[in-house]
Structures are given as C-alpha cells and as structure tokens.
Length: 286
Image (cartoon, rainbow, N blue to C red; front, top):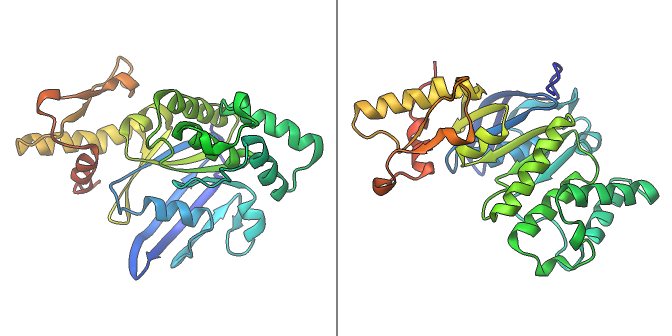
C-alpha cells in the first residue's frame, strides 16, 4: 500500500558523466509501497541516476534525501536503507547463496538467529532455497540474477534500486523476480526499476518516469503515461505514416494490462523498443 509521506526525494539533481552533463535538474519523489518504472533509451541517464541515488555517483548540483537524510551528510545511515541491484553481478560466485548472504548480512550488522532467519526468508523469496549450499559459479544466468537480488535484500532495505534486472532472464526467473517485487511492494518497500521493456512497467509499476537526453520528460501514472506520451506518439507517427509498431488498447476500466501491449504487424515489424523510445523522446510533454 502506498503511503503519503515520500521516502525518496530528488531536488534539482544534475549529474555529470565524465565531462558531459548526463542528468539535468531532475526532480523526483518515490513513496513507500510504490514501484517507479524508469524508462528511456540508452544514454538517457537512467543508470547514472540510479547510481547517484545509491550514493555511488557524485552530484553536480541539487540534493537527494532518503527518509529525510542527505546522502552526503549521513552517508552510512543513508546507504544502510538501500538495496542496490546493479547490472553486473555483485556477489562471490565461488560461494554458495547461503555463504554470500551470511557474508553480506554480517556487513550490515546482522548476526546469530536473526541472520539465519533472514537468510531463510530471502532464499525463499527469490526461490533459491533448494540451491542454498551449492557454489554459485555453476548457476544459470537466471539463478545468478536472483542471487544478485537476494544479496540486496538481506538487510530489509526501505528502498530497492534495480538496474535492468531482467535482461537475459529465462521465463521462470523473470516470474520469480516479478513475484518477489510484488511482495516487497505489498510490504511497503519503495522500488525504482530501470528497464527498456514497456510491458514490464505495465505489469509491475504504480508510476512511470520517462527520461531522454538527461531530462525527465514525464512522471506520473500509467494512465497518464498512455494519454500524454503513447497516444501523442501514435498520433504523431500516424500523421507521418510511420507509426510505431507497438500500440496500446484500453481494457474495460481503461487501465493498462499485460494483454494491452499488442504488435501492430508482426510480419512487418521493424521498430525495436529502443527505437520506439527514441521516437517518444522527441515529443514535448505539456
């Protein structure tokens, strides 16, 4: 359930990547029990933003607050409230899931019975309980991704950051990740989720953010995203006789569903989702 008091707040945040201004004057708020899906083409600033929220990227200007605490003034307590799942695997492949979680749990100051109970909870959450004591180097890509997620959850973070966590996942692992995120959302965890896949945002997220060229062009609900972005893109491209191949239909209550993502013409499909997002990025949002 979404609470009314914001957990994460970004105020006029600008970020540099090397010598380039990668993110410009970003304002954003995320609430407990909310999953924000952050969409955008490669190079738009999604991953840089996520790294800044995690405290791993220096701010050029602005400030980031988590539960009222600044990540620059209170770095230790700030980071202790965050679980970060990067694109890269961030665990020890020669160790088992149990040993990895025990190691990271101790780093967060969890010990004894509390740690054992939490390890069991997390392994069950990511559906790796039957692999608890097997070294991870022999795992499939999907199992490794789930262990990556588990290591970010061992300390019960208030905020979970995921950078394209389903890339390359097999369907069972994808379903396991979705099930885990739904449960965390229902428990009040705030989640920021970057992806290229609109269908994942439709399925998982309460809110949508759309970034292009370092700017946040849209932040709102799925319905608003459909009305202000998708519909405008459809009309604009139809007028040019080059409509995107991905279109949406509304169900009876005008909400987006998994089934609402349709292919206009499979035989003639030439636009990738990334090209579609690039087309959307050209639209000015009122």
